[in-house]
Length: 287
Image (cartoon, rainbow, N blue to C red; front, side, top):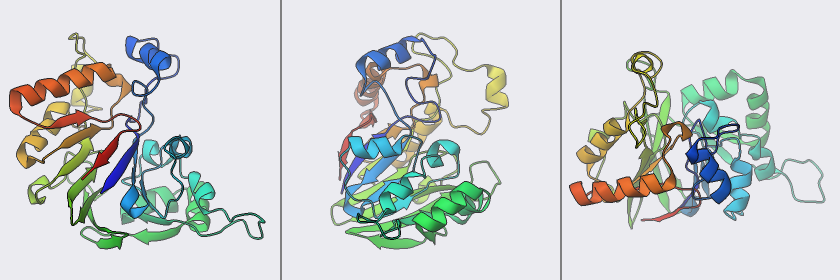
């Protein structure tokens, strides 16, 4: 099972326009792995693109992806869907063009994502219906994609809400991987099988490495009340104990650089024996 991290950022990629913090300045000067595009992955064994942030078109080119048969949307948030226009490139007919639309990818999503991304948006409705074959996945639905068995897991984003977040369990003869790139708080992680790999949401850091607050306590009680912290995300890893964990959805607002994350991963390995790393753009993963 082979994967490429196309983008390891989140709602606030790195660098952020107009920001002159040390993390953004470094990212502009150094590029990848210090710079991060929006959260997206490519699963090579299934020709599967997971999520479509704004620059996914460029990220597919950068990674040398030549074919995409399936596109999976983990949820309806803008930072995971605004790149859906890439469907036109993926499904355009080869020249000489007679009808523009050729073999289009299959677009996989939950009922809630379909309602909020496709049904409630005229532009995305046109894109999805013309440039994709839409397949709705209910919780627990499985599909065979290439050499992989894919199972859809869903959960609420907010406690008591509808199942608006989706994750993928991928299995083949070499092992099992779980992709839950964002909004992990209410996933039923206790029901997961033994995992060789978990690619999951990082969660936010209330403070920078220097101890400065990244968010106010008032924000944590209100705007961020439903958001997972890094400590909560790490607690899920401790409970599940996958062989390897890769944290993604790394926000610029956390004010940590690529080097800071490498140091934190070494610290967790030394102190707790956890095999954890933080994703970076272009990272390749194998199971």
